[in-house]
Length: 411
Image (cartoon, rainbow, N blue to C red; front, side):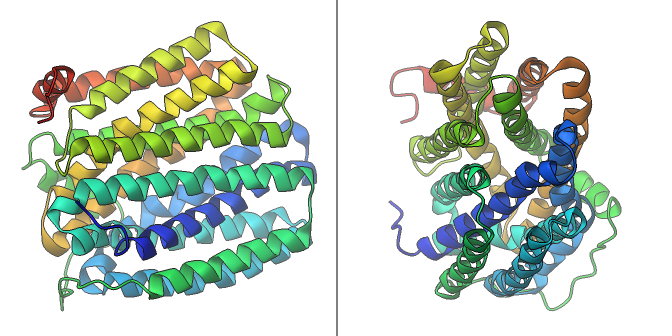
């Protein structure tokens, strides 16, 4: 059984960082639309989402090297310091209603997140050992999604009752709290490598790591499955920001309530996956999560519900999303030992955020020509394809899902 106290500084720092970044990004989506034109809603949402993840595509190799050659805690501490200065710049952009400054800030925040991501996940094994991977991953992802979706919730409320000084104060005080929290983390890390000759050239690094991952059967497909999860989450969040006000006629605050339902759902699903796994990496949970998402999203597409029913189906979709993801993330982290883990996480990040970037581009096109409801059926097809592929080609996944469906199957 994992004790929580030793994990708290990492969990809190992660939550505050994700919360602040998504709070900032969502405010851009809601307020910058008023600065330009409401007809450009999908374009602004796509641009902000795309700029935030662009760094993961080009700088993930550098992030992997840093996680191998530097102390991981120090990487996160320094990143928190740089984030504070970026929120100062971003606040200036909001004050002058300058879309270029706030868009540049969201890109740089994405860059900082890219550089410390492998260090953040790499600390999980250092804190809890191999037996702590499922608990640490599940709980970290729970806090990640609480941050990723409660941040937008607060942004929707503030955008309806805009107060520049309150907004800026929140940016800065949460950034300081994140720095203080990680500074209190006590962890014994493996020693960094004194020298690393791995390339940091984008795409060359990813190709070499892809070849390395081929030596572990099913690993590349697991990484693709994890990336598809994040692509699904990206599509859902962007779609809710447009679908709720434009199709369902909700206010920004009401849209925030739906985002809250998804936050609670995905957090609960991630936490449940960590608990059900009982210290193991339970890949059998992924197909169960995939089937659940397929059913709920298909219901959303066919019935086109409104109000409480719509929010409840979004909650269920998000819960199954968390169940689908945690085993995949834990499996990627356990695939290699020691400092080489940073490379694998960096490679995984590249695939993840490449698909998120693609989703940002596709979202603008699909919603323009087919409407926001078409996103739900697109996600059904994507989830079915990935789930079936992993069940067929990832070793033990099919046998584990059969075992879980039997009484006492996880014993």
